[in-house]
Length: 355
Image (cartoon, rainbow, N blue to C red; front, top):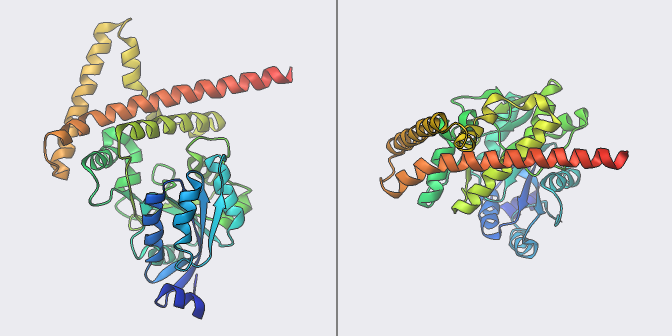
């Protein structure tokens, strides 16, 4: 699984480390966050990836300048411009460029704890049949109040339902599907992908890892959630960015569901409930308003519960903890609807072009 580093690599790293047959693949568009991410890679203890592939899909000059500062500290660093490509296209190009067996995908706004790759090596040794391995994404200490509240809501049952395992994690190592895995912290086995003839879908705006995981599982492969294999993930710093993230997540889910209908589950449609109630107010005002009142009460109760559990100061924190779940649900629902309409319109245009 691991092998000793060569003498030149040891000199670059500053201390003897093992090299895991893995590539750290990072999509980069935020230079400030990227610097923190690469620093956490450079400071890995015990084991390090064989190579790092950096896919530049935004602010390319600034991100490339950041990456060049780490060329002496990250052996095997490759910089891949990917302007104008979809997320799936950028990731597939990185897979083709990388030489390692294990493909560890991270977002540029995550930071890895020092022993991440050592733990990954031990996890892979225990579970050699895993086609994918990942863990939680935690809100970093020192995050702003809004970012902490986003993390709390995403980790709550009302905020995310079963998807809260992305941040909260399972209590122990668990075989799972996309409910327990997220692409900002996800490792794929190249051999499993190649044997199955799979790669990232290049047409999705989001959820490309969800579709790939569903395809792997359908072929009899297994995916593991390892709670100790966590990363620190910066949350969106403002409401507009958070709303956009939720909207695109809904759009990607719609695209994925139309491509693979069996992947759609009832909880994916849960965020449609408040939107449906709002739309129903003109037709059945009493029933719709009653349902909205119950939803508002549940959101307030969720906010109070999270506030007490996380020991945040009342005031602004309670406001955000109460309203962020409804905002997330409404934006997700809008994305789900927009993505569905867009896909259906595309199919209609394609059929028209054939006739």
